Amino acid sequence: EHLLIPLGGRDIYLLPRLGASAFPLFDADAAGLPTGQPVLDAKLSKDGAICGFVCANEVYTCRVGTSTAHEVTQVTSGARGEELSHGMADFLAQEEMDRYDGFWISPDNALLAFEQVDERDVVQYTIPHYVDDPTAKEDHRYPFAGAANPKVRLGVVQIGGVSVSDKRVVWLHLFESGAD
Image (cartoon, rainbow, N blue to C red; front, side):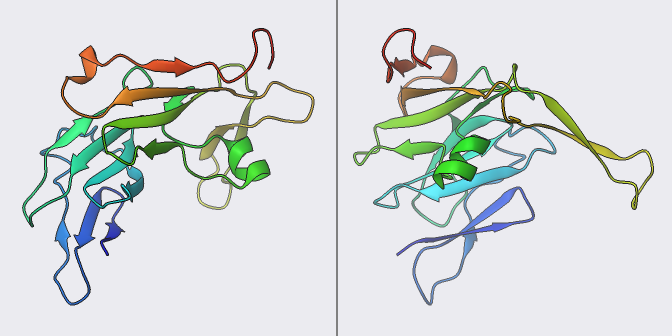
């Protein structure tokens, strides 16, 4: 019954039910989210009690309840940077498997599974933007045919209870030893 409405890249509004007023789920700046970084892939848990999202390559959650600003909790750590990400589906999953989710909240809202993508070995490709500005460009990592693909693994972490620095990630071993 709940509906998330992303606005302006950093704001998420919640419409609790049809006919109700939408309200901001949290204040990104007050929550300490990295300045200038967009809030991506926001979604609600199955029962609508938790909102999860990605900001600056890390997964965050907040409990959904009343129409007041909610406390935001960082759930993953260690991926802030260009080459490592937590909670976002990698390019190959999106392009080849039609999978766009990079994190999943357990039905009891206690655990969060997330994809870690390591693109350090993937070739960086520069896209120039000559029309806007002759010096403007974007850099992306792209797994060209025959070149290295990103390394992906799946971790599970407890959502609440402990600070992000004390959270222990359980890494799932989905493939036999030595398999890619």
